[in-house]
Amino acid sequence: MQPSNQTLPWVLGILLILGFGGCTHCDSANPQQPGAGENTMTATERDNGRTFTMNRGDILDVKLEGIPGTGYSWRLVRGDPGLLEPRGELQERGTEAPVIGGPVTRVFRFRAFAGGSAAIEFHYKRVWETGVPPLKTLSIRVEIRSTPP
Image 1 (cartoon, rainbow, N blue to C red):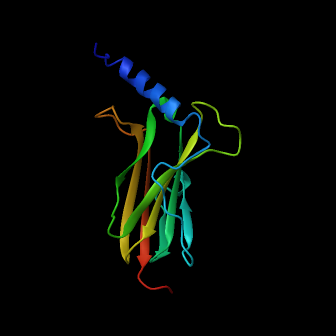
Image 2: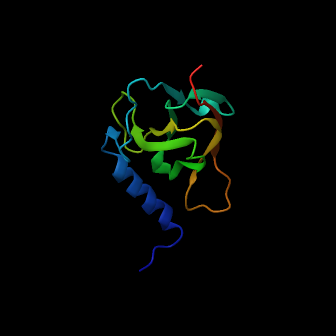
């Protein structure tokens, strides 16, 4: 028996809740930690439209809060891996006791790989909804210096 189009979102929502409900810190892609001498910068939704200036080798953590139980999730939709090397993703929860279906912060880590200018963009949407604009977006620009000032 095939699930109907109406039951698919519920099934996906339940799977998301079960998948993330019990963890207080889920390391989904084994992000590499910053090394000695690497500076770490953090971007959030409040930084939409902002330009970050970094040195080659610096780390950029993009922290975006969402509620996975709703079916919405943050996705990287535009980037330049030749300049900003993806270093993994992880899930963070606040210091409060985790709540099933509650908010989760997804952290996307990048390393400034080469000098230049790169734009990255994230969309917060349901992956199964096609032709529907994202509920939220985040776009930032990163200027990477080849040599420290």
